[in-house]
Image 1 (cartoon, rainbow, N blue to C red):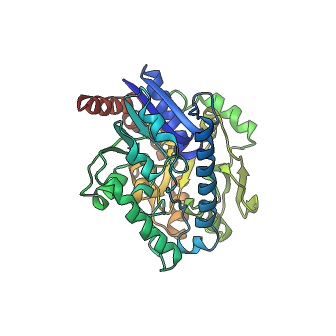
Image 2 (image 1 turned 45 degrees about the vertical axis):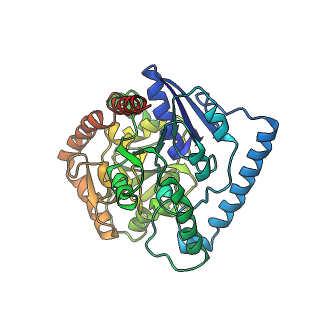
Image 3 (image 1 turned 90 degrees about the vertical axis):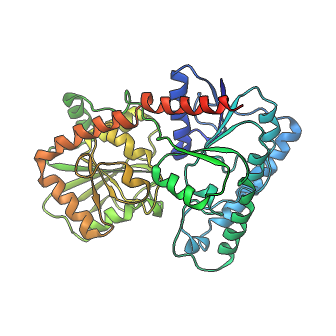
Length: 404
């Protein structure tokens, strides 16, 4: 069994998930290679192209760059603030894939890598892991309810119709959340697709609770004193509107929690406008490439805040839970699958009053905090560990190969 994984990149969000799945498979001695266009680690490879194909690939990249600029400009964000892309222009990769000796092609986040037509032309068995809703929408990566009729809505409808060529294509779809699986089933009931939910694996040897003495050292390193309550917020880009950092800032700007000193760690590209809002001190750590370092931040934090407008199953949530960090989040989309309410975290309503009261009550009930931490780790081992997730991938590969 030989697996060819394809992902636009091997870092950030979906690219990071691809690398985690690849690493898990390699540890289990699966013959797998990860091919990317944007490379940031020694684990992945790039597909070698001839001179002619290199020119075609360059044209593909230029078209995607231009269309992405147009689709995600400031005006278009009024139509839909979430990311948008086309997936039109054909690449040189299908013929290379078809002539390779791989048994299964496993697609991850393929925007700016493969077009919809490319996927149709691939003749080998395909697994496609949906990182967001783009494959079942038009140009949008997530549904947005307040769409006005304009040029971008026309393109949305047109691109959705173009994607109907995938309806008869035999595909094995993986969704990282049950919420996403339900969305696909409701949108694509007549497609020739087999849909499975397989969570993103978490390496429990990296994301884990640390010794109390080590935690003290890390707190000293980051200048955290015993009086501070520590919050954590993570996103590829912390200022991406969909991720909801402004909700946290608004709570403290409006002084809805008083009498305590809070520190907020942000992990990801970008910075907040100010480093202090009343009793909230913000430490912008930027993008952290080391998973072990991210685990340290989880271990010195008291609570992860995850307030996305809509999301699949954010890796920061399941990694934090593996580190024993409780999560405060919304009970919608894939977010609802991250925690077990009042056992490993707490659901909040999408209001500043609810967010502030749940944060305040969490720190008042000190007796339960250790329970949240141990329950988070225990549940994570049962649901997201490499061992559990690998078995599901192995079963899927075996079923596909048995049908060849």
